[in-house]
Structures are given as C-alpha cells and as structure tokens.
Image (cartoon, rainbow, N blue to C red; front, side, top):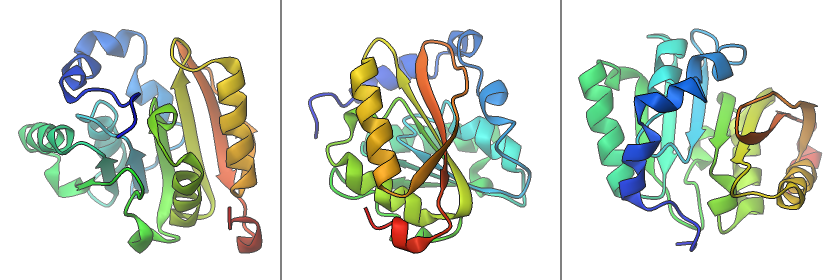
Length: 193
C-alpha cells in the first residue's frame, strides 16, 4: 500500500454531510451521468460519490465501486443497504497492482477517479485499465485535491492519461480540486499504454 493511501478511518470524514457544501456530488456529476448508465467509481472509499451516482443511474443503471481497503468497501455496502441502493451498486476490493476490472472491458459509460490517482502506486496501469473498461467515447473525470497534488504532479497525471489513450475534453471547476474531463479514444491501437 502506498504511503499516501488515506487511512480507512478518515473515510468517516470524507462522507461528512458538510462536505456537500464544497463538493456537491449531484452538481459535479449530473452533466455526465444519465439514467441507465454503467459507472465506475475508482477509489470509492465509503461512498460519498457512489450513493449519489446510484441515484443518478437509477434502477436501469449500475455503479461498480472499487477500493483498495476492505473496511471502506464494507462501510459502503452498509450505507448502500441503509439507503436502499444496494441493487444498483456492485462493490469490489482491488489490489495495489490491479483494479480488477478486466471483466468490464468496453462496458463503462463514465468513470470517476476523485482524489485517488495520487495514491495509486501503478497509475499508468490503472489508467490503461480504466481506458479499457470505457466504451469508445466514454468519459473519465479525474479530480485531485489541490492541497495534496501540485500543479506539476497534476500535469504529469494529465500527460500519463493522454499517453494511455485519453483525450482532454474539458476542465470542470470543482472546488478545492484540480480536475480534468477525458474521453477514451475510439482507436484501440492508441489505448495500449
């Protein structure tokens, strides 16, 4: 596990309702996620974005939520049951070397990597895996915390994403974050990483 991985107990701070004042999931995601969509939430933690994503995709959609830490996943599953959203959320534990999403190739409409890529030990491999999971034209929203990730680090992340088969389509404004909206290239030859 990377030294930068958020300790599981900080997950409770990440789901604090006051966070919605700064980073409202509905406002951030509603332009990209439609009813019936299949969504990937990378580094979901306890589900701050996962539960709103499930509401956005509705009963015809699906959210695949992955995290490195089993305690985060167990908390997410409890919260999803309590909110009545379990049927639309599939929670998975990944490893530090693999997201474990090879079975999702070409199935994902939208992927979210919010405040997580700076913690990923094998970022290039993760981005290639996410790219393969997206359907052609599928979108990836990357947001990294400004207080943890410098401009230079974010520029390196951006360059790596472009090398892994993504094109930049926007830079949404998300409070306290450096963010980028990317689209998977349609040409699979450019998605090898």
